[in-house]
Length: 445
Image 1 (cartoon, helix red, strand yellow):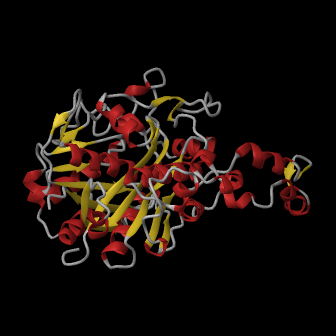
Image 2 (image 1 turned 30 degrees about the horizontal axis):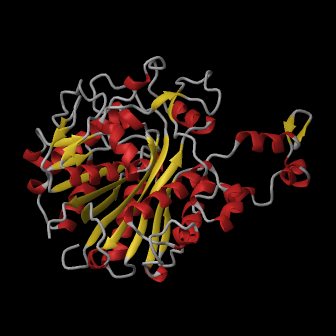
Image 3 (image 1 turned 180 degrees about the vertical axis):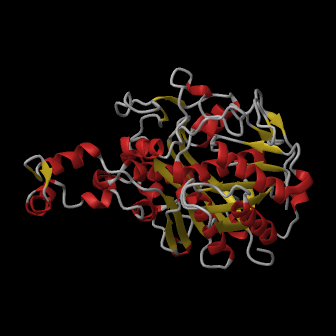
């Protein structure tokens, strides 16, 4: 947004199958590790694929003040991930929020005005705890059939009165803003896998127009539950036939790609007005300079074959940044590993980038991390910010057998040096037709 307030990235908080925090994620990707394995959270033996990306064990209570720990009881898995990611993000940014001060983790007193601290967090369709729900539904049965009358009179009383609060998408942002005392504008975005990019883009605009000085933004979701996996199975999206070789299952842009691997995870980033960041001598990973969004109109489950929707978002981001495609030095892809979706993404990138497309350095994370839905885009952008800061591309697993139409240059075995000044990151929803693009730049002044 040329001429408006500049927006820096000062904190990265990620929770992924490779660990808690940005450093375990970056180190794992750089070492070529894969976080996908047979699902342990529930019995997946009857499903088309038993694979998933599960986060190492953690407790949400370890990331909130002692006075707030009772609230953990009404946090679904998605909310717990967001709360942990928020803690990692503010610590990485060096922000002394109310949470860190109360926990005794701050380096000093609060160092930001809570009325200028906003939040934009993407969320998915939070799946209910099946055991908890099934128990209540069982008490509403009559002659082996569900009875609405018995549900109203008896069944629903077997759920805790606050049960619904565990599964409302806006509760990710609700808990994060309360815990960290973020009182500026906040919003929740539920647009599938595009949610994180859209939330970060909105946070960028919130700061650029002067409505906040700092925003915590990104997304989180867990698809590691029976309903989350079955939904993808019914849509014929799961990568099957790889149960014994999980590290090879998700194959972004590969000629042999077969589908996605469900995952859980999330990322919350700290965006900050540049002068505000410099005044407190914050580390700056990069600068957000452009954002674009669009919607497909051809189908709610299938991508635009010509990539038109994503192309519109990329062109809008370039225009917003005030640069041409020639300025893009690398691209953070979505890379689902689905035949049609990958093909559509490639067409959009090729049309948007023109001659820059061939041989352009690129990153694809889902071969290592799987698809974490609303949390995927923020994790992708965090990895892109690290690549920008370190001038290095981490290896992108399973991109060594590229589709002939994929002429991007992925690091396949070892990290690759990449002198990056401007990087394009894209995301889109597998269902719903939402697209988004963000452009970040190395902060050189």
